[in-house]
Image (cartoon, rainbow, N blue to C red; front, side, top):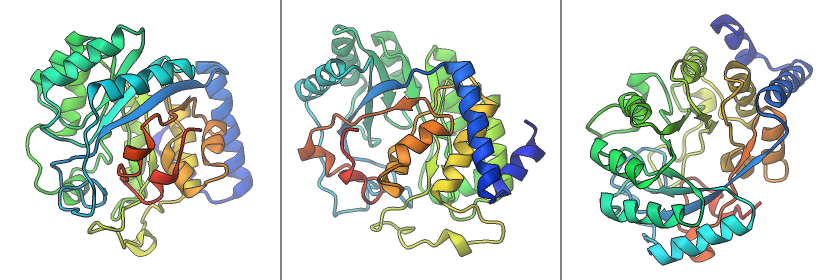
Length: 311
């Protein structure tokens, strides 16, 4: 599928045509990944964050958040529960914080590996030294979404950052031997259809092992919390479930062997059918949430996330 065809599909609104695209993606998924739906247990281990991303509820300037960091023993209890529920992998997710030291995370990884689980990390932009230490400790995968390949747009919604670009970090993760997951946000204010088409092609160029896409859902206590993307710019990509299903399908067709999750953001916007429709459009991974309720309600990256339980 070349860029022109990707663009045509992104602009398509005809329901019958889109159903044919989603069916095509489902067939590609069956051929490339089989019928199995993978279950990977999500544990949101902490919500402190040093970043100032303009849409995320965990941003450091949001003083309405009750910050927490789970203990190693609490995380291990969640990992054991995930294993008992049929997950072969735990996904450790957190805000980007110095509270998670390289040594502490490495020791946690070693404990989880001892119970026979794969370990996926989603801990933001970290030093190469930390990433190498965690790989040596046994971490298998790392998730770091590039969110948009448009560098100017990325910098606009991620102010006050420094260090290597996310693209450089993704390539470094590959060099360190991680299976790498990344992906984009759909409908960021200022994102054009051309940008999104470039992102889909970038999935293949980066040779991603996992592709995570989701609609742009800003938290109300952020600078972009009141954004209406529908009128942001001419040729603005809408942040809708339909567009997310379309991008999921195009990602599957473009990268037939990648793992693609049906995300919690879909469940937030389409409470009754979001995850199921994601699977019908080419996704093959579910990530049930094993974060204890007393912490989960405080890990609110976007509105309504805290209400989404284990499914």
